[in-house]
Image (cartoon, rainbow, N blue to C red; front, side):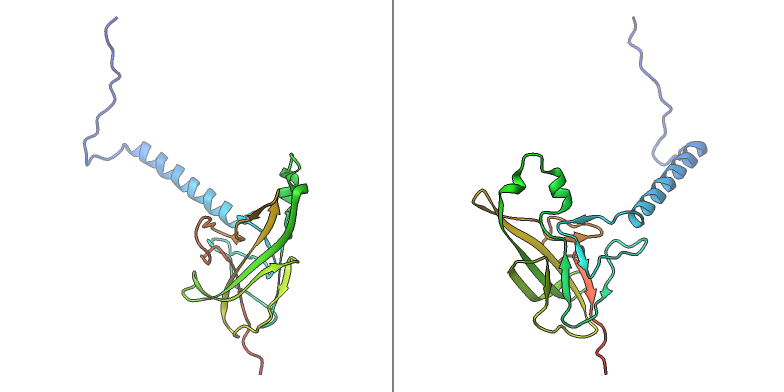
Length: 190
């Protein structure tokens, strides 16, 4: 049997695709972009770590990151999901969660500098509850980033969850980063 080769039409560099093929590729590309845009703006927002309860993480339709939600005080009470989270309990088939001890939370708040990074202005470690009222007042009319994580002991070894993030997740990056939770303080009342 002779060696047969499949011959495809050759397009030299600089030639264009046939009109029907180009139109089909454009249509598929537009459909993919539309699907990505709709899924980015609809349904559940991507989150990592412990989810915030107050201030909530809210995101605009086509936004990559969460909005700056206005809080009701210069010393807001930040609240977050307790650890272990419901999805942790559901996924725990081997009973590891029963061996967890000494759950404490670490909270950090940064005053924004460029909108995506910040200067650390508040930090607490060893918090026993999934909420904390800031002990020092923040500046009025100012944007802040914040995040929280759980520290615990499993089988005598210290462990830590990842930092809480929302929106376009930049996991593995240092905090603060644009994926941190966001809030802003109101203007000073006269």
